[in-house]
Length: 89
Image 1 (cartoon, one colour):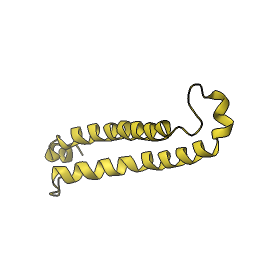
Image 2: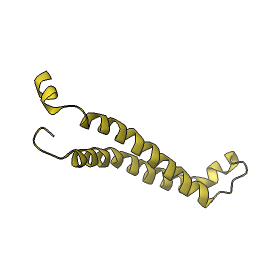
Image 3: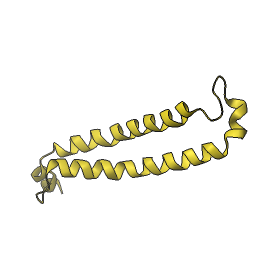
């Protein structure tokens, strides 16, 4: 922002960079969950092994939490005056 970047651009960049590890984790988690579903079948109560609601719902919830966890600090950081930040350095 100190170099002239618009607030929306900075906010988008921070959120996208923050969500990359979340998306990688979801991908790895879904692959492992699909591979280990037979091992975990004994721990499932009232849910089938290949329940599409669970396999779709959990990633959506994790993405929502990751989005909130990256957007709130990024939004707060865009509200700080760049001159004050540069003076503190």
